[in-house]
Image (cartoon, helix red, strand yellow):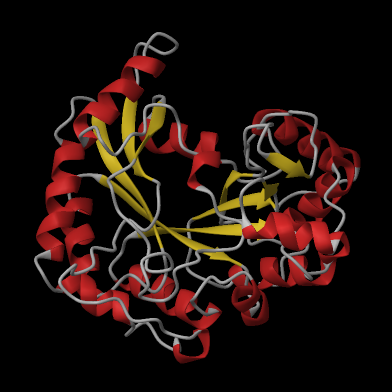
Length: 339
């Protein structure tokens, strides 16, 4: 590898790209999700609670500009000279439903293509103008040089991608899709409300517009095995993505997964820190070396977390543990990539 770590890491990519420190600032733009408002479901994903990952300055009662400024004020004392990316993180940030229409439930097995309800909804009722206004506000904040937008693969289309392409002409732009798994049986069980094929279609369409694209993937979803985890790595290695965020399956209080896990703990693989380090190392070992690995773990408040217990270790600590494990075992990203 060309950097200190045994994989193509995000921090090195940022330094290469910008030549200076760049910090993501999360914002809550007040969006909802078609998996919560009734377009697909009203239950959401079985593991989801937005409280687990929202920084203190993310408050949808504040304007986007105010949230960004609060985030900048928080980070500035640590690093006085840096730029910022507005990270639209909470819920589905390309989904603007027409509130005049009554939501309609859509079973999972009918979601077979990206010509889904949330695509049509967003294009109606001035949805594109709403998105443009929010993104323009973010880019108007001093020091903000780009957008990172998290969304669902079934909530994107040509119209919205043309908007992003316009921004990308003069700003850094990346779209992150919540994939979570490449197995449709898993996606159905966790109530994602989209298929793997929809994710592939969204990634391909984003690539067609020349927009940087990333994926989120969860290691350890219910009833998945180690073979499944490595199959995920092989599949996504052949997609035109730029970045990947990994994190361990977490059981959090107040989610439907809490009850399911209490009833059947064996539904989840061994996610002890030692085993997770081994699995992630093997995953990286077979991953396309061109993919930038942005994150290895997720951090949730300890009072919310039921399983697994990493002893309160932060992502950067797990990074060092994984790096040491891979170096001891002669492993590096792409060593066993089947490209």
